[in-house]
Image (cartoon, rainbow, N blue to C red; front, side, top):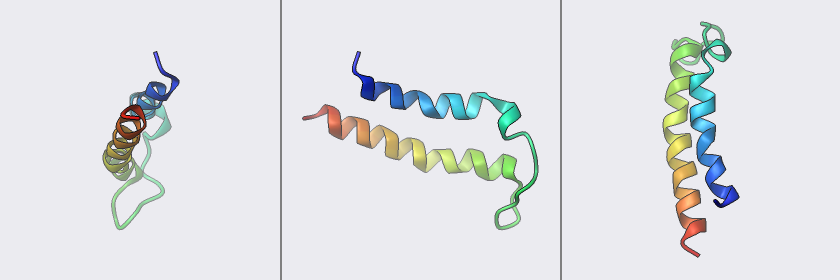
Length: 58
């Protein structure tokens, strides 16, 4: 297994460890941390998948 694929575990670890983001502060544009942290993972995960895909295609 390539080490690059381990980067795809970051979203799982970041989102499954609920005590890390189970709070309301800091807010961003009126959204509590709990919501914008999860929403921030959507483009971050897409970027991670794209990077792994591009590096694997070589």
